[in-house]
Length: 199
Image 1 (cartoon, rainbow, N blue to C red):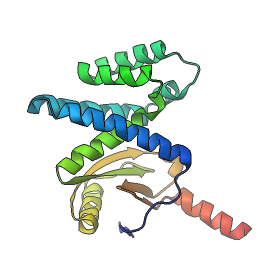
Image 2: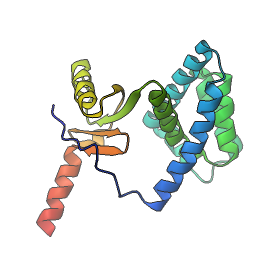
Image 3: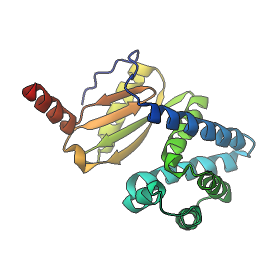
């Protein structure tokens, strides 16, 4: 499984809306990261685990995705629903309070980005990088380790993988790390071919 990665290439295709959400998410993530640093070691690890759990829940649960994106669901309803989910998942009171604050500011749709930004900050403090890998099918442990080695060779840091599945990709995978996105999905290749044929 080879990767063609150009670490110097910047993604210049962000829309103004995506840029705005990214900046907003980063501010909230930084605030949570600074709060984390005041916690004892076990409290810090608990928060790391909680944020990772939150990201998985928001990435893989279609109902939660609809919940945080819907403009017609009230803040109180969003708070109650997410708090119940996080409580059931063993989330700490600190994270639940943070989520409640985000919802009260009507920034709920940015929660996944906040979780990713927080993970990036934590990884940076540990001289690590987070690679978000989306694949059409679940990757075997050996495949993930192979990707980690390849990415470490390019970026020179320990790689932490956050993997998820998306059957819409048909095949292949997408890797997001730092400012880079390596799109090796079959869906993208087919769309590129279709565009070329129509051109």
